[in-house]
Length: 536
Image (cartoon, rainbow, N blue to C red; front, side, top):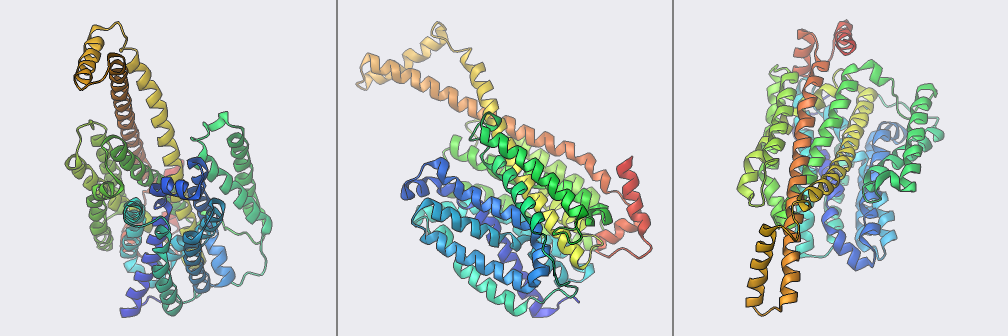
């Protein structure tokens, strides 16, 4: 039964706060790597394990949240996870060595893994069936805001305090969330006591997902499959994940009930599109800050302020989109328009120049905010349409895992694409710059003349002039490469629009989804429609 009044909104604040701090911690450390490296006496490559360890633990635990909720009880597991996340945050700030920090970041990620899927399941149980589109809008606030403000908050803390405070900031929030969770969150009504634990399945999941996440996180730094460790772990990931799927389909007591995907084709199709949403959300949050800081000279705080209008737009629209869906507006057209708007945002930024300023980012990022709002809320509602109880918790876990993996794939693909395009553009530009080109010589002589007028010797002035030419080539190479990346993301989103038709259903069923109503007992024909469309 849905909650009412004060208790309802306390639960909403609790679960959204927990989801936001979990997603903030995915990206808050990114801007602190240099400080961490210097203070802990480690290389940047080794320090990157602080990010990788959190991501690996996160993506292992997320799909298991439904099972762990059944094992410990949802309230106990959720509250315990908040406590683990909070304690690990405290000890991360107290770490005196790199590998001690990495170990506590892994524990922090394990605790944080429950804070997405369980938050979503609790939120949907808190609202009535008719209000679930609004619940989806509120939940999407954390999904969009967390990754956006993480680097900004991290940058502000690093600029004004010391690196341990990027972890200590979680402690008071976590303590409050744990108290509120234990006080107000109720146990799931249909909990089934777990008597058998499939340790082999857990091992296959941990090995497969951890190996895949490592390949995605570290592949580019190690030049992908030219490095033997990446090749080996890619094979291990494939074997582990295939073995895990086989185990879950044949085991009597699976950790993840994959048959929920056959009972809800909406969940299966929405999972694919949620993967795409994760790709676009995390890759755009990756590309824009790197572009602004590397080419435009922005610091972390300025970059955060650059992203703020788009995030604010999404924050305002997400609950509104939920309200609109409650009134019966079909979700499929909204998703299609959302993908097209995000494609337009990326296409507009693909024409950036070295003179691009904050005002040039404003309109595209606001368009992105509108697009994300139109995609996130309908997809969240569609993914859990018709699911109840344990199936809802299982669906939420799978859906959140797909978004996290989509983000990991998105960052890895875009990062690799940018590096490849840099090599291409540099080769192209250098081919037009030779010592025998009169235009080049004229430019070199002009720069050298200016330097000599300031007191430099002829030899030093010539060297500095060629270095300046090279610097201009590097900046132009990076500009063209990031523009190509924006264009790639734009094409990717346009190509996703046809997938919306896989979500097509009969008119009555579509209205039920928009209203948040569950399927009727005799509504099997609606699933048949999706199956027919998918087969077609």
